Every structure is written in structure tokens, then in C-alpha cells.
Image 1 (cartoon, one colour):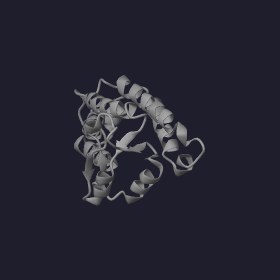
Image 2 (cartoon, helix red, strand yellow):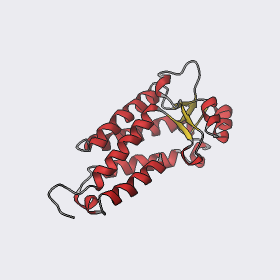
Image 3 (cartoon, one colour):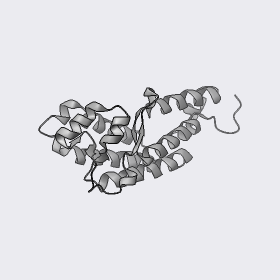
Image 4 (cartoon, helix red, strand yellow):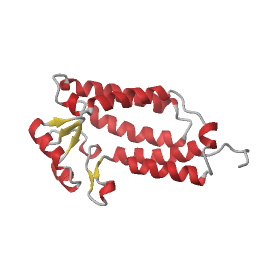
Length: 185
């Protein structure tokens, strides 16, 4: 996902001829996104994952998602954010209905070459925000079922919500870097 965001940011700045749009446009509640991402950085660390507090992961994860949801809702004036909201809600449904974890599957992780994650999921049943998907998984079509193996820079396992979020992020970046109408450049 990072690759798509970086490419969109670079193209948005080039196509929109600079950073003027970033200066002119505004984002509300940016601190909410920062809080959400800081929580995720904490719980997605090995130190936390192997600590006595790792059982709190689903609670912290859901809390981080609530902060991110609030940020998205505050910025629905951007078309990209409306698209992000759709993907976000699909992921949120999958996570909430599966105990605060996103189900992941060994066959999909194998395609993406995520062998270390496979071993950790086999050993612990869950790791970071992922849980081993099985016959009890709820809303399976919304979980991480889309595997990309190559090119390596794009490899990973994604949900339909993730892909919708990526499209929304790309559109949002272009909107955010675009100069307001009526301004010459």
C-alpha cells in the first residue's frame, strides 16, 4: 500500500505543478490519524506482540480504528475520503466480527511469500492484527483473501477493503495536492 501512496503523492505534485494545493487545502482532525497510527505502531511491534499485554491487541486495534474512522468522517468533503470510508467500513466489519483481528490464510500468505508470518500464526493462532482464518471465520469475503506474489514491491495479502482504501487514497492525494479553482499557476 505504501508504494501506491508514494507514487500517487509524487504524481499528484508533478501533475498539479507543486505543493501549492497542499498549502491551500486543509485536513480536519489530523491529530486523530496520528493517534490512530501511533497506537498501531505500538501494537504492531515485536516488543508488544511478545509482551504480557499482547492479549490487549484487539482492544487497542479497535481503538486505533475508531480514531482513524473519526479522522475520515471529519474529511468527507474530499471524494477520496468517501471512497476510503467504504473500504474502511468493510475492513472494520471483518475485524469486529472476528474478535478484533483480521483473518489471514496460509495459502494466501504463501503466495505473498510471508513465511515468517505463517509460522507465527501457526504457533500462536494470531499475530499483530492477524488471526488464522478457518471454517469459523465470519465475513470471509471481506478478509485478507487477495494475494499478490509478484512484483515483490507489491507483494502482500489484501482485503477488498484494502484495495478500495488504496483507490480512495490515490484520489484523495490528487485532490489534496490540487490547487483551488480560480488560482493561476
